[in-house]
Amino acid sequence: MKAIGLYKIEIIRKGESVKTLRGHNNITTVGFNKLLDIGFRNQTQIAHWYIRLINASSPPALDIGDTLSTHVGWSEFTDIDAAAEWVTAAAGSGTIGNTATADVTVSAAGSIFGFFVTDASSGTSGTLWATAIFDSGSVAVLDDDVLKITYTIQLSNV
Image 1 (tube, helix red, strand yellow):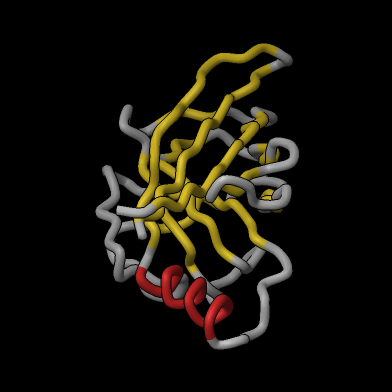
Image 2 (cartoon, helix red, strand yellow):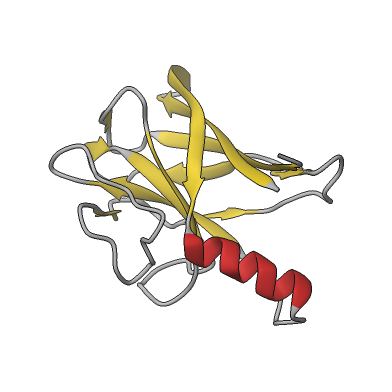
């Protein structure tokens, strides 16, 4: 099985779209393990997933071995009102994605390098499903920018 996470992030500034980012992400080992445990071991389903942002002083080094509590080379961009909940529609044709965009409002200017998907709205306890850095490198954001995020997971036979 092959799993791919695809994203689209539109940055809205003062009601106008100023940038659109598209790409794919890396699903972590702990993310795959959680998927297998829930699907095949009857473990507790995760009720809520959140999209949070990556901050770093230089382009971050992501690794599939990263966890929410241990990830060398990157930190979280926390100057936001709240993490965006990723709410999905029912899966179909091996794909699942948002029912509506997951919106993040920036509360202070800064630079973001990517995002991550987790079952924790804050903190370092929980499952780190996936991480992504932007192909374009860092992206400057300003106070009150809104990031409209679409995230889709596709599973297929290899």
